Amino acid sequence: MATKTTTVLDARAVERTLKRMSVEIVELNKGTDDLIVVGIQRRGVQLADRLVKMIEGGEGVTVPQGSLDITLYRDDLQTVGPRPVVGPTYLPWDLDAKHVVIVDDVFINRGGRELPIHADVVGKKVEVGEDERVDVMVAELDERTEVVIVPKSAA
Amino acid sequence: MTGTLGKDLLGLESLTGEQIRLILDTAEPFKEISERAIKKVPALRGSTIVNLFFENSTRTRISFEFAEKRLSADTVNVSATGSSVSKGETLVDTARNLEAMRIDMVVIRHSASGAAKFLADRIQSNVINAGDGTHEHPTQGLLDILTLRDRFGDLKGRRVCICGDILHSRVARSNIWGLTKLGAEVAVCGPRSLLPNAIDEFGVKIFDRVEEAIEWAEALNVLRLQFERMTAGYIPSAREYNRVFGISRERLDRAQRDILILHPGPMNRGVEIDSDVADGPHSVILDQVTNGVAVRMAVLYLLAGGKPELAEAAKGGSSRRRKEKE
Image (cartoon, rainbow over all chains, first blue to last red; front, side):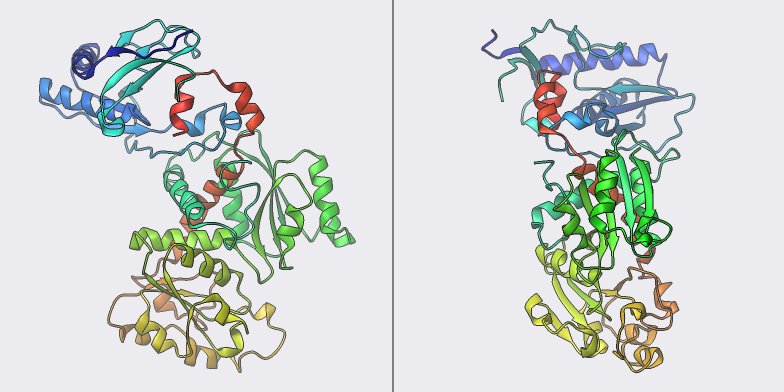
């Protein structure tokens, strides 16, 4: 039984990780042409924001940045207690033939995935026990940037 | 407890300011869905909704239907004519029969005040009041308030005057309760014969002359003269009403400021409102209609929500679940 919180990445490590990911994204895309970065509400949006700024720093190009709230697409909406707050979706472009990078805060590859989704660019791979949970915190919403493993029972 | 609104939406009188804000805030992201090429999200997939309209309606019924369809619910429309209602079936029997077919929600419009509550007390499905007699029309009140909020931001201290046939208007009641709870200053203006006797109990300002109302207000919500509900001679004639109480360009031009013009529709052009005002630059009448779909999507989404026992069973899933509940 996990009882304590373990820090996986501190703020500086998150910064370094994102930096590497931004380079990988541009490398995979062979440049910045047709690239669109879309953050998943919430926290994915803040991470996408940082990635876009890093790409801008490295390449001198500001790639379009959108946001997406997936709440309304969940198949377990009937089972979540009080209705989750729906954040804004901002995708004002035609996405045909574009290369869309989806940024999620579970940018940690947890192993034991529930969905048939494979991330091309991964922040960090961590093994998480059944009774544990990975929390990604960003300064914009959580007052500090950090990735931690906490017991599931924690509030 | 289903969601934070409870089981039903019967009126704005019973809601808190916080609950009203929750609905309005939830409506914001829903606006964008109607702007998409593919106007559909699967949030209410598998839910069955019955639109039970015992009174004529075009705008409200279509607006609810769009809201339901854009959330992927399955819908059935029942109107009084052409159903068992015309054979004398009571409201409760109609609803119980529908419920026996395992429905999840009922949207009801009825000419009797209190019909929605009567139904809500007797069936397990969520009930949404789409207008009950001269009592309340909460989703219209909410869409009016959302439209005002779009323009004004915070409604605290904003001056809104509701003009015309207050006596027969469920829209007026929902607006008065909703706006007051959000801190707006509310007034009514109309002939005394079309104001309820107990209007003082609402705690609103009363203007007998439309010129005074225009001088005071930042927004006018112009109500339709409901000739179909008038059982006695409340006004001498539509023409005289227009001359004394009609909202005209000349009257508005005398005001010190631009006044936002709302109307819940359908309009009697040339009676309570002149065409050049209805189609003028400060009219937000069509914005109201657009907002109507978003507000109704928000209400459906919030009411349809989670069953606690299922949530209990689903615990232990991904970390995302916890985060989105914040």
